[in-house]
Length: 525
Image 1 (tube, rainbow, N blue to C red):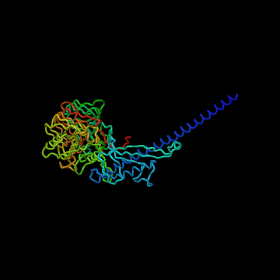
Image 2: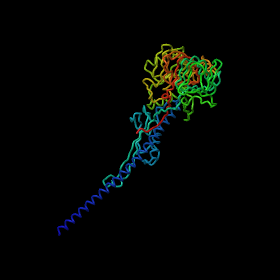
Image 3: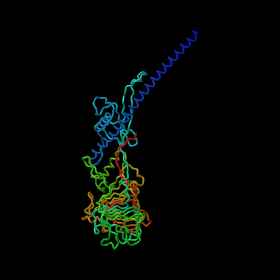
Image 4: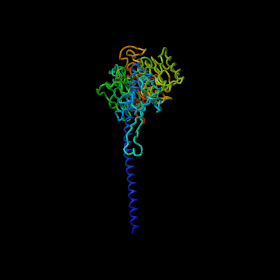
């Protein structure tokens, strides 16, 4: 009997020991859960602070670069006020919960914040210093920030862990994203609103076109005159803003909603129709061809895109200014813009381009004046031609490409506008182009499509293709000859006016090339 009581007392003692051990374990797990939960909470706060501080830092860096470039004629600086960048990083980190360590908020000193300059591939280039004139590392395109929070533990101190540090890194970068600007599907967009009668007109002058094909829409911001035609095919709607009908030299053919081109073998396909004038106001040049030009005070003014915006010489143009900035950020090649004097005699500018091309140069070729392409000239794949004058192609079987083709590729971090243009001919017969060496005459009517001699862009040859957008902001495109092989003439045409007189031309809209670049900052964690 005594033996049984002793056994029960021993058993009871074992249960107490087991319960005690269980309670110790439970308390340990509770302590672990509390401290681990707090650790993750502090780390989330640190991550958020790092994200916000990195974005604030790269935004401050970009603004300092833009301001310095504005003050220097568009040329980016070689030094940066990195102390100002560091102040902005610390300020935003502290506003998001990171403790200050020196007793003065939003200054350059905080032991809980570290920051580095980074390139576009994520490689750390150097520490962001407390320095008002720190040299800019080549290719700096991002900022990496790491913040930390030191906090007291509740129960982990029982095992010697009285403090824990929660930290998190984040990297914000400058980038360029591309978006389709709109859903425009117009193969030819004519924007010369001054040509609003049948004497001074935007003339889709369908004179003996012989099987011309408009594979997407036609828009005329003014008057549309039609002449003697034969077998033109329209696969998109034709819209004229002001007047459509016959003019002094156009013959008897008129536009109607039923049969848009009476006579001949002309037809609309796939449900395309003529849209008569509706009295709506002029949209001018489409939004695609407008750019925001940065002013010295940091504001922007919307302007029509012109050849002068690409000028890679003093005074530099807005598009070239953007390129310099992207190049500094490591987002564009070091050599992409080339300056070529215009024709002294027809063909001299083309010879200069041949020399550059055969040296392996590709990109934006800016011609200060006129450009004539003689017969037998080689193709220039991977080249966009920006001509601050008139363009005259005398070569047959010639392909004109854009800077988006060839070795450079369409994914270059440089302006999509520039890459997707084949030819920009920027001359203006109404007094010359601003900044141009070529002035041709006076009278805004010379921009209209009435007289084929008033061309700014002339294509009078056979089997010529333009693999990109053809853009003539201040005058007439004159089409003659034919495409012979039935190939597409262009992926899009934007022009002030057009005079069409030739055989078998085909006009196509390619939405893939109508993109607009937008500078952006983004996290790349």
